[in-house]
Each structure stands twice: as structure tokens, then as C-alpha cells.
Length: 248
Image (cartoon, rainbow, N blue to C red; front, side, top):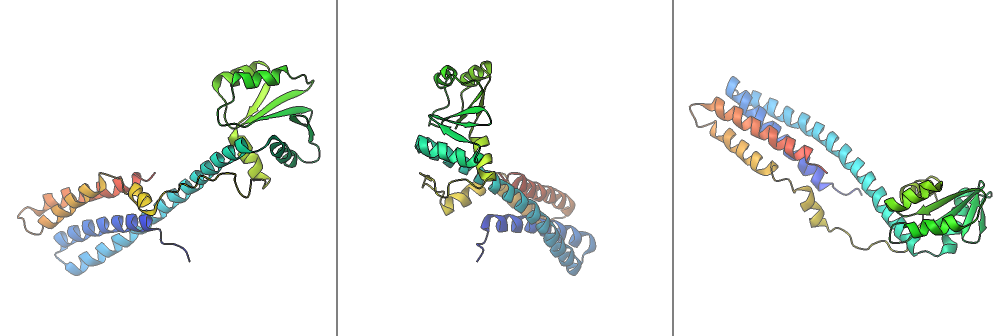
């Protein structure tokens, strides 16, 4: 059973309520017909609620995919940093196929010596220097989790290629070689209420909504309702826009 996406549902409802209040009040003022106002209000609520749902769900799905990949990259970097040299060399040999051969601390593939330096800290100049000292007639390449600017500059001067965790993750994912279980998956998870709170950390939406709704309500009891209708409508629109655009 698919879980209810409460933040998305409430955001959609919020936009729908803003649209209903705006159209119901405006149509009722100009037509004096409650029935017509209800029809326009409900239609507007459904229409703008649907548009908000489509837009927000698309942004949410895109964010989910990106955040999932970023999380997996971090897990992979930590996994490789904690794995043995033998495991890493066998993993990359599987990635490159039968043409790859393990030779000492490297894997030779396509006439290139591939070295692996996965650790918690970025690749340093000393790490690159060790590869530079290694005698090999062909090209050299270093695979690591991340690389410092100094190490990248030194490697470039000696024509040594460097691939970070982004490239490693993409290559392993393409060949379906990502680990089924990581050494450490960072058990800390964001709690339900914390996730809900983070999605509703939009300071403008609520005050704008209540201010707009209050002005709309005053339009029923004042001798100059147009000002309250226009002002309330603008505040409700800004409230919905601030909520929609604040999605992260």
C-alpha cells in the first residue's frame, strides 16, 4: 500500500483553499450570486490544486532521485574507503571485464595502470607522488573518493588521470555492480516529524494566508469591499506562490 505523501497533499490543499477564497469572494461580490461563486470557487480550487499537485510532485520526485543518488555516492565512498585493497581491485576488474588484469597494487586495463586510493580524506600530493614514482610505460589513472586541488594540479602536470566518486558511482551503476549492502549505511535517519517540519519551514506562507483570509472576511462587512477583496486576493496569491516556490 502506497503511503500518503502528507506534505504534498497539504501543500496542494493549501493552494486549492487560496484559489477558492479568491474566486468565491470576487465572484460573489460582482454577481451577488452565492451559487455562481461556489461553482467558480470550487472549480478554481480543483484546477489550481491539480496544477500545484503536478508541479510539486514533479519537483519532489526529481529532488528524491537526486538526493538518493547523492546519499548512495556518500555510502559508496565510505564503503570503498573501509574495504580491502583486494576487494577494490576485484570490483574494478569485474567492471572492466576479461581484458583487465590485477598486477600488484594496480589493475592494468587498455594499456593503462589504474591505481586506487579510496580513503576518508581527499587525495593528496603525496598520494599522487607515489603513483608518479611507479614505473610504467603506458598511461596512469587514479580512482579515489575525492581529490584536493593541489593533487589534481600535480596529476595534470604528469598526465595522470583522476576519477572521483561521481565517475566511479556512474560506472558501477551502469554495470549493476553497486554493492548490495554497504559496509556502513549511516543508520541515522531523519524522523517523520522532523521531515514534516523541514517541509513546512516556510515563514511567509502562513502569515500571508491568514492576512489574506482576514481581508477577504472583512470584505463582507465593510462599505468599501473592493479594497479588501483586491488586497486579500494579492496576499493569498503571494501565500500560495511562497509555498510552491519554497520547495527544496
